[in-house]
Structures are given as C-alpha cells and as structure tokens.
Image: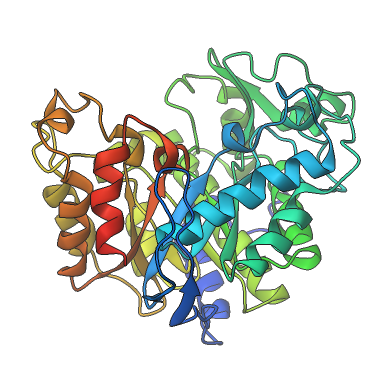
Length: 410
C-alpha cells in the first residue's frame, strides 16, 4: 500500500471507526423469519407426528459441514444424488423444528458453487477443480425455500489447506496461481491476512455469492490467524514497518489484529452495499480469551457498528464442564456491550451429545442441550442458537439427548 493513499496502520482504529460511520448511515434490517410454519415431523429417528405450528421467532440454526455435504466417497456423484442427500437434510431439520441451515460452501479456498475466483471443491468429485456438472449451492437454496428454511453460506475465509487436506490443489486455485497470496504454517496454508490482494479475493468471493444466490446470510467461522502462525508472516510485517516507518508502526500483535479487522469491516460494507437483506455473521470460539490467540477482535465486533450483524460464539461446553461451564461462558458473552444492530446467537455442541467429553460430564446427563436451551431462553441477550452439526440429529449416540432438546422445540 502506498503511504500517500492510506493512513498509516498505526491509526487502524480510526480507519475502523470511519468504516463504521459509513455503514451506520443506514439501519440494517435482518431478513424476517417466518413466525409460524406447518411442519411434518419426518426424521430418520422418529415416526410421523401431527402437523404442528412451530414458533420461529428465534434463530434455530444448524451447521451443515462440508463433510456432511461431501459426495467424494459416494458411488453416485450425480446431481440427483446430491439433491436427494440435501432434500433429506432439509426434511430432517424442518421436522426437528429448526429454521436456518448454515451450509459450508467454501471449506478450502474452493467452492461448492460456480465461482469466478475459486475452483470447484474436491468434496464434490474427489478432485479439486473438477466441475461436478451441477451447482450445489443453487440446489441447496431451492430446497431450503421449498421447506421454508433460511440459508446462510458458511465460509472459511483464509484456509487453503489443513493437515494435507485437500491432498492436491488444482491449477486454477488462486494460491497455486500466485503463491504470494499465502503463508505456509506447520498445519497448512492460509491466505495472508495482511495481503491486500488476498483480502480482495476473499471479499469478491463473498459478493459473488450475495449477487448470484438466494441466500439470507454469510457466515465466517472461527479460523483466522492459526495458532501455529509463528514467524511465517515476518517478511510481510517487516515490509509494513519499512513502508510505514518504525516510529509509526504497530507491534506485530496489533498489526495482525488490524489485518483481520480490516477484512471484517470491508466484508460487512461490501455485503450491505449489495443487499441489506443478507446478514453477515461470525462464529468465534466460545471461550472469549481463546480468540486472542487467533487475532479475532470479538469485543469490537460486538460493540462497534460496521463489523457484523450477528455473533454466534461456539459455547461447546457442558453445564458442569470443570474448565469452563456453559453458563459462565454465556455470561461472559451476554454481558459485553452490544451495538443495537448486533444479535447474539449461541453455538450448541450437538456433536458432544452422548459422549464422555468435557472430562466425562456429557455422559452424566441426557438433558444437557435441553437444559442449555432453557438457559438461553431466560437470557435477555440471546436471540437463538445454532447446533453443530447436522450429524448429531441422526446419530444413534446422540439420539436421547437430541430428542430431549427436540421436545422443547415443538
């Protein structure tokens, strides 16, 4: 960046406030959620019930990961096979009493949709860059509307590879075409958060989804700077210091924090410049302090306008977790200062149901999730939940725990 064109990053807070001021000129209206719908309970683990009226005045979301959408190991990788898979997912979620699907559409610098910037995901065909012959996100939008479900596109903004997945990148992967966009750590490759071109790539990928698909939201997950970043970005940092000057430059921790904040601000602005009917949310780690390790400035995202429309911390703890209880974690989030336009949702650990996680405390009760839902209902700040993940709805291991929660949703 040229020094004449950009205020020194030492004033990054001022930049962010300026971004916020521009965004605050218009009230962001979240997409309306149907208050009541008719739903027939046709899940894989229970029989048909009578059609019921279900209150959808709160967020009742569920994350559907790329693993649960994967066609990679299916013998039939056709469009119809994918339609059948997602139709069953939507049917089960609707029967459960949920109202929002958060579908992972960019897991590894690739796409489960037709993209101008990213190659087709390997999870569709087994090979990154290979066209599956259909558009999964378009199909997921169509089926979501059929079941009167909202749909958020879940994106991992920086990740290119993790632990050798995918095992081979396609020639049209943006990192392969320009390795200056990325950083290599022990665990994998990420797009460099300090790189302006990488930031534009991420935002352009978001906007093409907003423009081309009938979605209700964009969500970033909790991967920002990886914990094993080490000194991988030392050259980028040294370049910044050289350009700005040592007296004007931030230390490396504040610089990294500012890099992530810049992406979040610019993504928010880009989405709402395109549509105020699409919300932007982030799902950070449930322990607030852990977010510091990833350079995720969650407190600013909550209390400053112009970052997000909602925050959904992953409070994946039991009510008796010795390290940090669900209630204590929720308290730390609900007592933050929130801008009027920022909603608080809570991520629930469906995947821990029926296990001995959190030092065995999940095995002590089959009503942990239902108890946590009751706690949320009595919390003035919380406006709903998201469950991780879809597999917990149909797993034998989690059957009793999830059924107890489901009973409260009907």
